[in-house]
Length: 69
Image (cartoon, rainbow, N blue to C red):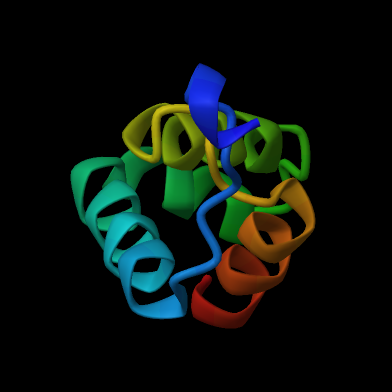
């Protein structure tokens, strides 16, 4: 999988940095989430995955976002 660029990134520091960046870049979306709009969480997950070039473990992304938001 590494050969095809499909290795999953498991570096927690890189993941948390990406999560923090996404939250800082999308304050209105974070506010919507806090207002009860759970559906925007998927958008935030997508933004983190985009920053991580699709190589992050989606479960860890969800966990990290829930911990930070």
